[in-house]
Structures are given as C-alpha cells and as structure tokens.
Image (cartoon, rainbow, N blue to C red; front, side, top):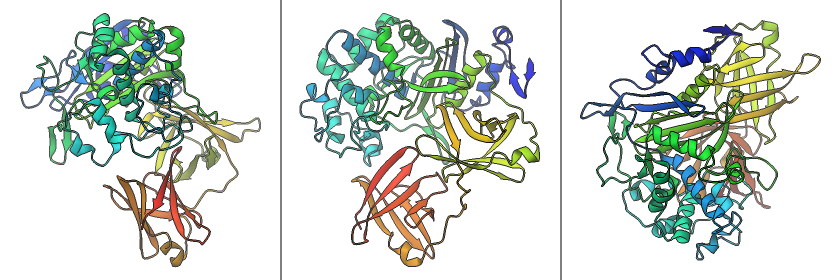
Length: 545
C-alpha cells in the first residue's frame, strides 16, 4: 500500500491478491454500508471482462432470517431505461423507426401541444413531457394494475414543461411512451420483447419483467426504513414503472448485459455511441445524459452509469470505458442508496484514490480561495473561509466543509469522492475551480463579485406583503408564500415550511436547498407569477390567490 500526496492508493496487484476476506478493501467498503442484521446488498466488480469480486452482505429476508446471497434477485428500477433504449436502437437498425420520428407516428392521438416531440427527445429526457412519477395521485394509483394505454391517459393531457429539446428534465413518462412504441411496432408486449431479444439471447436467466404473482426463487424482499425501523416496502403494481423501471435482475446478469452492450452484440457501435454521448440542447449546451445512460466521472475517469429507485429497492451500475471496469450494487432497501459505494468499488478496481488524508493549508494561502465563482450555466458557487476552514456553497444553499488533500485540491467532508481543484494563473492568483463528482465535472470562473450577505437584505413590510399568496406549478403541485413578522416563508405541497431570504427587491433564496425565487409583476405592479430556479432548472408558478 502506497501513500502518495495525501491520497490512499491501493495497487492493482494488491487488489488482485486480496479481494476476499473480512479485511479486504472491497469487503470494507461494502460492510460499512450493509450491516449483518439489516437489509443488505449484492455487489459485483469486473475488470477487462473478468469478474474479480462478487459478494453479498446483510439480509435478503429479515422476517425469515435469511442472509443475502450474491445471486439474489432485485428490482433494478431505472436501470431498466438502458434496456428500453437499446430495444429502440435495435428497431432503428431494423428500419422500423427513426430517432427523428415524431411520437404521433406511433401514438396518433397523443397531444403534442403544437410541438414536435421525437423519439430522441423521449430517450434523452428533453421532451418536456411531465414526469408521472411526481404527480399528486402517485401513491394512491400505485396499487392499480393499468394497461399501458390507460397509464398514458394519466399524464398525456398535462401541460408541457418546456419546448422539446430546449431543456433537460428527468421524465419517466418519456420512457413509458418508448415502451408503448416498442409494443406498437412489434406487436409484442414490452416484457415479451425483452425476453425474446435480450434476456434469452444473452443468457440472462434470472432477469425478467417483475411481478408479484410468479414464484421467483432467490428474490430478495424489499424494505423501507420507517420512523420505528424497517418495514416491508409498500406494494407497487409493476404496470406503473413499465419500460421506465420494471425489470428485476441479479448482479451477474447485469454484468452479462454490460458485456453484451459494450461488445456491440445488441446494437452497432455507431448507434451505441449515440447512447453514450451527452445530448446537446437547442442552445448548444450539453446535458449529462445520452440514451438510457448518464455521463459522469470517477475522479479523472469518464463513467457511464445509471441508478434506480423503486419501492423496496435501490440500484447502481457504473462502467469506466477507459479501464474497462464494471461495478454494480443492488440493495433491497429503498433508503440505502448504493450510488457512492458502487463508484468507490470502481475506483478501487481502477487503482484510484477513494479516501483522502487531510493536509494543513497555510493561513496566507487559505485566503486565496474565497470568492464568487460562476459556471457557463450562470450558476454560482460561493467559497468562504471561517475559522481557518474552507466552505463551498452551491448558490445560496447549505455550506459544505472542504478539506485539502493536495495543494489547491480539496475534498468534501460529507463525500470524499466529490472534489474541488483550484487553478492559478501565471501570477499565482486563483482564476477558476473545477468541481468533480460522480455526476460529472464542472468549471467555475472566479468573478469580481463581492461575497453576499448570508442572510440577504432587508425589505419593507409592504414589499414583502405583496408577494404573499398561493402559486401553482401544476394542478397537482403548488406552494404558498406567507409573512411572519419581517420574514417570508414558503410551504410547498406535502413539504415543511422554509424561510425565504431576500437577495434583491424581487429575488429570494432558500438556505435549505439553494433554490431561488424571482417574483414577476405585470404592468400595473401586481405580482402575477414566480419563477423557481433550482440548479439549471427553471419552473414558472402562476399566482392563483
């Protein structure tokens, strides 16, 4: 084991010799997350097409005291989207559809609201179609068995979120529609198409469209962490997630899947390259999504990945193309995300640092970093120093402690795999920073803007009073703005009340999540709407009261 520049590196040779046993590095990572008497997980790591690690932790069934096994079956949630995307590309290669086909070619009665919505828009989450998983009646509807056509009725008449191709917004509805398109073209059910064209040819014998009727050996029971401990996960009809999340599988079957996809056994390279490429919006900005795969980084290594969340289960699969490393972790608890731990496994297999050792920073150097940084999307990252500690703040959200592990390189106290690296110009002054995380890297330029006041500015009572009221984002989701003494508060449907802080005469921010709210007035000076900004997403809320 070598200690280099404050980072813990485990050599590749050491990994190959020590991949099992209670003290092994892979075991250590997983055992910290999956405890012996709690819901567990199964994990697999492969390098250059060979499985180098496969193991299970925790319990597959807590009531029957059954330990998890590496070949247990889990629902994989949204990793299903990869299968849907590849199925669509197979039909493209067969000449049965085109990525630029409008969805009305296959679903003639779908209301497109005078827009042109294509198959590619559905694949890339840029269609503007609202996500049915976020609707108000989702919990009540979850137990109902509905046909694909009936499920589409649930969301087809909702107003569009934005013009197709202009923004990125994750939407299960888009992938649901893709499943329906597959059925329309092939005359087969989505489940049968997968079985005949993917699962059976690849020998994925433990994978199928999930259901709760068929007896399935080695299926891990799904759990939810409630207020009083673990409980059995709520029932969810598998007709609801459909082509957006209804597959169940094992870690080894998902390894077979990744091998088949990346060796072009299912679709040709030119089509797979599209799935593995960041989609470009109408304004030229790139998203971090292709067709069924997200793009990110495990440190300097580009990654292709997707996670899944569905009642009782969570999943994560990541592939590092340059190193040809695949890691997957499946969990049978919907409150125990394997996203970070899976990336740690991939990093370990690639011989990269996944833990850091803090080093001291000279007081004089510490004061080089503070400032307001902006990226190409117009978002701000605020770096401050307090008590000889450095903090990063995305927008006006919560502050996060960052600690140095090399000169000008810092890691987040809450997540060592998220890093910030500062870049200096020829004079030694900081001019930009690069934020690195599992979901990708982002460059932020240092501005000359002054550090903002943490509690915003003070506004007159009559100005604050003008903003009180109810604002509607959709028929199923709204929020109220109320005033208590000289402070505004926002309360959204089903959420707790949070304080709002003024940044300008019309703009406010929330400390809890960094969201911003801009109030808009008409020609008479009456407030008619509010624009909610969170990250790169903007949502218009009409004032209704």
